[in-house]
Image (cartoon, rainbow, N blue to C red; front, side):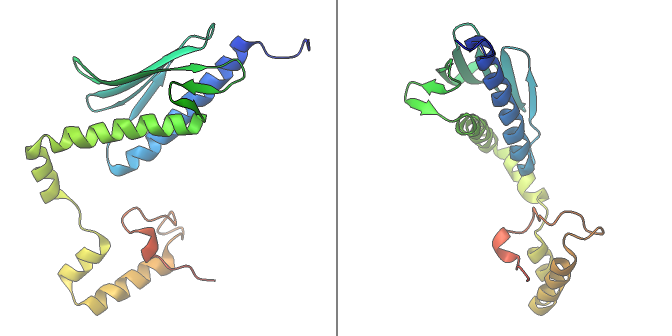
Length: 182
């Protein structure tokens, strides 16, 4: 046996740290929808929170047994078990999954729970619908003629990515509406 080979416990710990990092990345990406997500972790458990919903993922480095649950105060919504194998793979009852796929699925479950939670509160939905900012296209149309809107969008596209405007990625406009120039 190679004396430099990592023990199963060390492999599981490395996989766990990678999984927590992926949860952080995907929670951050989910926050682009306007909700704030928090991620906290310790050596054996990670929590992703949004409003009153919590995704909790935990494992044992010794045997790789792991579990996850999605809950709200006094209510477990979804839960499951998996294991982090000695070879670094994740095994679920339905079969193996890649680390990133597992992290994405968990964050998607949290996001969909948040959408269900918000839709079950019609007073919040109505308030947010009235207060929703207009897209660049709708704002331009409400203030002028369609030709003027087209011209204002062209100006935005020409300077997008410059120091003045910042990032080349527009969160308010669909990607298909941007044109790529050679």
